[in-house]
Image (cartoon, rainbow, N blue to C red):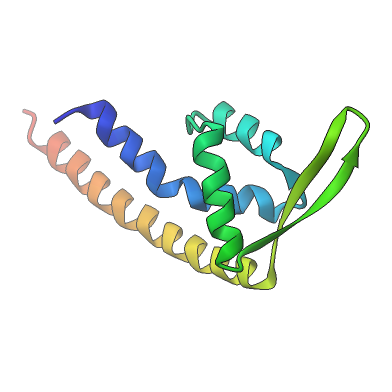
Length: 118
């Protein structure tokens, strides 16, 4: 197995969750999302982000508005819909449960490893 491929798949699996969290903080421009995700080492490119934003919009989880910009063309700012907030709350509960579960498994493994040494 290839470690890097598995790491990429793990990141892809939580990308939607992270994007919804970023948008939940208030209206946000896609470029700012890219910067935050890149800084968090989510390794996202525009070709990944924009189709995902379109899918989330089509699912009714987010909406956008155009805002004139002094620095160039109008910008599209995204925000969560009420349905998007509900969806994110459900994902957050699932995430918290997964973190607890994986921590339980990891701690048990660490305890077993610590007890197996003389």
